[in-house]
Amino acid sequence: MLPYIEHPTLRVGAVELQAFWVLVGIAIVVEFQIVLRRAPRFGIDRLTTSTLLGWAIGLGIAGAHVFDVLFYFPERLRDDPLELLRFWGSLSSFGGMVGGLLGLWIVMILRGMAPRDMLRFVDCLIFALPFTLAIGRLGCGLQHDHLGISSTHWLAVRFPDGPRFDLGLLEFFWVALVAAAFVGLDRRRWPDGFWIGAFFALYGPVRFALDALRTGDVRYLGWTPAQYLSIAATAAGCAWLAVLLARARGVTRAA
Image (cartoon, rainbow, N blue to C red):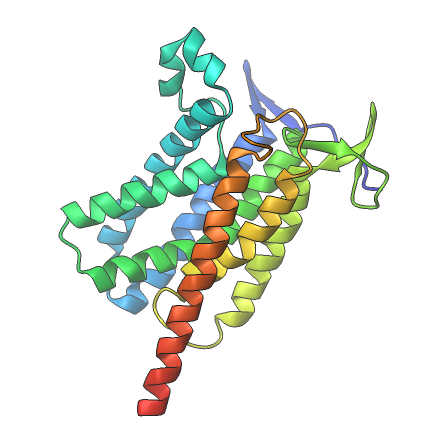
């Protein structure tokens, strides 16, 4: 089984800095750098890219917290309505994706961007997502905040109170593989929007399976909130890929 590692912390004066938040900061920097390098290929200048990235990340963090409170910890909201505004609190990765993409879509419409430019920018953003998510999930694995069922499987972690799955660590392994696959696939030109479909088609099924191993999470009719979004993400990603590739084949035949 995998060894248990105590969550590393760094003390700077009176401030204790947890590895999780350090990795979150690194993930944001990585997202910026990847998108800033890719966006000019599609005629999107650096200033526009930086501005849109700022909105996407800010709204993503807000969405991650709001979704987490509303669907995972509604009792906190009943006890203190201001909990919804404490964006530095608990976060949901799926909530961040939904909040960031929905908010970004609204911002791009208000800025008057052409639909094709909107699609290309979101495609750049999603291409960077597995790299960003891998770094963030490594932080979750070190923090051990997504515990799974007890198990003696070789992918389980030998916790002090007994072996069990660490779902943050398992998701790190998967999205790291997705990131590696993206590097390989990026050697050829794909239709605009390809990375959107590819990411959700690859991420959705595994996230659904991992959430089935969770303990302690709220469930609605037997599924966690993320499992419902996983089904929607998988269906949308596969359907989107099918449409894009069918169109690409049609264009090739016509040529």
